[in-house]
Length: 172
Image (tube, rainbow, N blue to C red; front, top):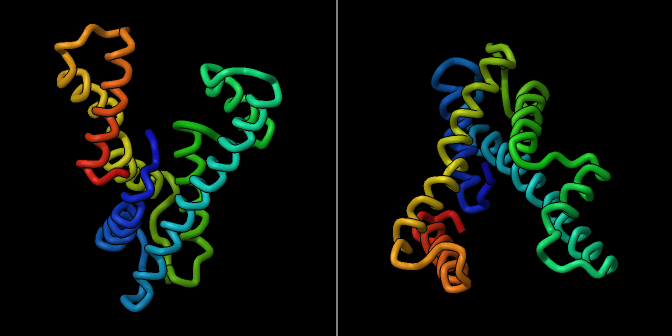
């Protein structure tokens, strides 16, 4: 699952709406927008931290003389050193931050549900909006069935097609 910046406001809005509508939290009507912005800020901060890890990874690749094929391996090392969670662990970290925020926020009057219930509902909403990479991959491969997989032409066209699909869905 990957967090897409353009979808963050939608996810934040849906989280606050769902938790409020189902009686998990209570938010004053005048503070709903602030609560949504706080949820967005948590996801944006995670992306900013990830970008710092990516920058450190690029610098490490340059220092070590590695090519871009080692990016993911070095990124995992950089993330471990910084205590940064990647992938599904990163999503769990973001969800935990959101739950902690709900408990201490001035914008949230009351939290009625236990953490496990909040976690399940937030995770389901995030999965709905952010877990689309496999679907995009299938669609891109379907569009490129005329090309031989593993060739340079396929790789180039695959990357272009994935970008086009993400753009068409409003993810980037």
